[in-house]
Image 1 (cartoon, rainbow, N blue to C red):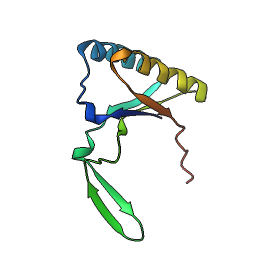
Image 2 (image 1 turned 180 degrees about the vertical axis):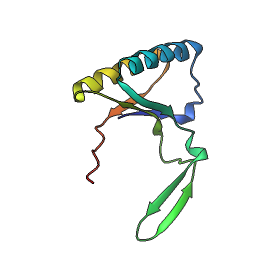
Image 3 (image 1 turned 90 degrees about the horizontal axis):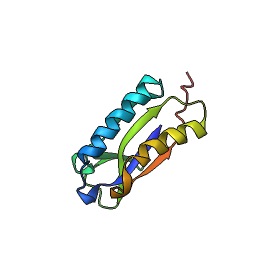
Image 4 (image 1 turned 135 degrees about the horizontal axis):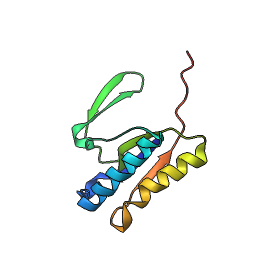
Length: 113
């Protein structure tokens, strides 16, 4: 899984160029069987955290203490971490110089059931 981290306080929205290139990349990766699912997330202002610190509690967003938040994800089908990293690098590269994003690549645990 590739977790896309963004600074949601910039107010930045994708350009038409980025939307067009992302559409092509997503199509290519799906056709190659490398992209299982992808999506963006609403801002933290529309979210809630559920905490457990001896008792359950909720905190409504926005979460001011978190400058960079997970803004989206991509579930990839890759042979290993190197291939997943290369697929993620393709995604990051099309953002060009106008975006400051970071992606974290992690393997999804198989169910132990």
